Image 1 (cartoon, helix red, strand yellow):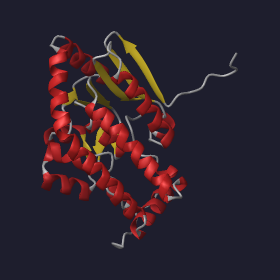
Image 2 (cartoon, rainbow, N blue to C red):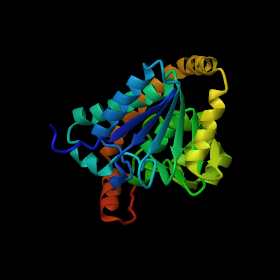
Image 3 (cartoon, helix red, strand yellow):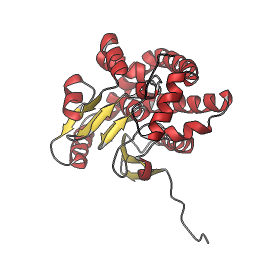
Image 4 (cartoon, rainbow, N blue to C red):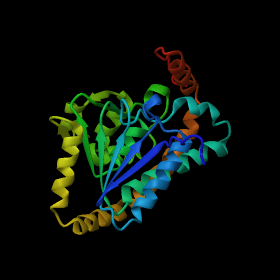
Length: 263
């Protein structure tokens, strides 16, 4: 008999044909470390193969959906092999989420930033609270977006607007993100009610036909997303070796504004 229960970093709850996947590291605003990404990948793959599930809702416990990658865990990536393992895990996770034969919703409260925003963009519908925020803010630590961020942003914004958003690293309030097409639905009241309304709407439709259309489009775009994930992996390794990235990490830990030199 176990003396204490293990707190999982990802929780899954099923209700009929709907599965709710909850990120569960609230003490760090659901920042994604290696263990959490592996657990999320495992759960999503299992749901992909579950014929009883048609709709998946991705959400975060605590004060935010997801604050991005766990920056402090970057200090543990001492070797190139460790780094590539993490990047491959990210790529596998994003590809699974984007191509899975289910309809997917991300429920955003608090913040969806960095890799967390990439995950949200990989789903079919983003529903956000009015006071929530989204950001592709890798630039703040001298890095580029990963998790297919370039692919998903260009898909919604086009090339020039994608570059501007990435270069500025602007934090967008949900109403502005809706105007730009980065959020699909703004919750007028409670977030859970807006998500439930969308799920109920989808349930009244021929879901298998909707999923088939998703699969066709996703398969068409699969080579492009794979290519971008490889380019992001190679580029991120180069960026991690820059002086600007080291300064960005140091400034983050010290809670101050970074001083970049372009090197």
